[in-house]
Image (cartoon, rainbow over all chains, first blue to last red; front, side):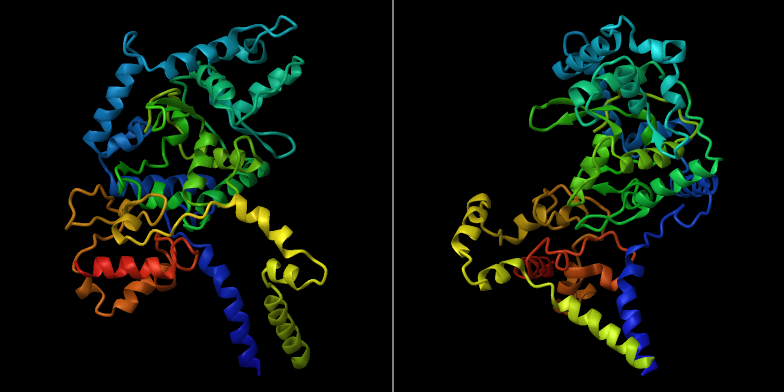
Length: 297
Length: 140
């Protein structure tokens, strides 16, 4: 009788065990610094040629083709005659949003020290209530504090363009996050759990593609390493339908990744989950220089 | 005590059985109009024919997308990834075709750490589609 109950209990609990494991570098590490070290060790062992800031170049570290394709679009972005329309439109829209004074006469620059220079490198952080505050949250807080309407986090024409220009003021500043308080540790763990948990009908975790299989090819593209990713968003990405580029913020990319793994309700830009994931994700790029508005496929 | 534990487990099992499709419940209700309840749903859903061409199932990103991870060395013109092993030497690797079917259906049951999606268990492909794909790659 006892054995029978044990077998039944085991049968019920087995699926729960099976779902929680990805067995990828960093998953079993207990603290934030140990997680980062384990992930860095993984890439040092498997891809010793990628060193330091080169991680920000993502998949370009894995193939010449990827590098050449990137160079082609980057050259076009900075060529006055051959510039993709969407690039010019987004940069102009972002600049206008950043510079145009509010109804009260103040501008975004008044909300940040140093006129916004280096401000993005101070985010994400954890507030007194334990919630993660991203740079985009701070932009919206600035709007609300000046009696303006906040921007929609999922709108790439407003928030996306705005983020590219505002974050661009911090290009070259390095990510220097510290996870030391209890609230920060809790936020890190929440983000980490999202990163290592299998989701969607495909039952894949972020860690599968961007740690375990980073450097492998999925259809035509090398999968980029998790280190460096958070440093270069928002990006300009090719859009198949328009044959042009589109702005994609980090949160928009999270949503896209989750759609690809057939998640029924993908995490939305600006959601608590996306913020928590950004907190973990940015910490893994600690030490990397911010490089906003670059081309990434 | 033993009885209580046994009964509670039995209860849980019975409750699991209660998860019957809502449509059958609605149809069984006296006075309910099944046509009115089901008609708008049918209009909304555009029924696409289920793709049965193995190569199309394997290469279409919205169907099986097998080639995103597995190469087909006998069809080098198909752009493919390298996350999983290439489709070659299949008869040697899977002497039993049924085992190949099982692997496509739920590779995680065989190797829990795999990145390979459970195409059958999560109903990404129909059993017939899985059969077609298994038979197709079995020739290589």
